[in-house]
View 1 (cartoon, rainbow over the protein chains, first blue to last red):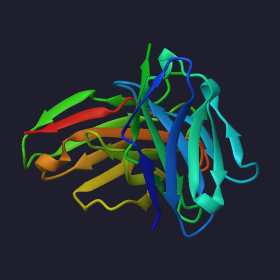
View 2 (view 1 turned 180 degrees about the horizontal axis):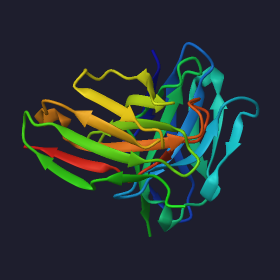
View 3 (view 1 turned 135 degrees about the vertical axis):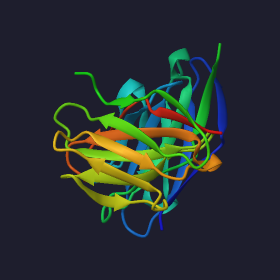
Length: 113
Length: 114
């Protein structure tokens, strides 16, 4: 069975500082991996995804993530945080054989002025 | 393009009642997935509809059922409501049922069971 663990339910960074949100997964097969963002009172929006190929994935709003098979990780980074990045971020994993998407519990990102 | 729309926005029911939630997918999308998001948790997959049939199902009891219409819109029905069914219910649409296809989410329906 697949699972996702997001380290830290709340993360605070200063505006302009590096954003690092951690995600580790468990999967018996090469997975598909996703990061979604959820703003208050809104649905989820896809930031980026890894399916195959290049392990460094670039997404929208300056975010990127690197698939590290040896560490079973898919951490999300952004070089310089902006106030508008404050939101809830969800890491998710999918087994290509059955296409169900399993979400982590989320990390709320706070941006300090 | 209106994107994914859901109705109603909010709903209050009492235990034992039945509820129907509705979803219209993004224009051109043929696949609809439903998720339950409890407060402070990530979304949990309920089921997916493609070509008017349930294709995948998560670990939810039979009280949760759904339907997809020929125009690809979908309904989620929950019978015999329990207090624990209180959550945000999210609908997501995509083109094709493969999980690598981007899912577009609606704003959700907030269900409160008293």
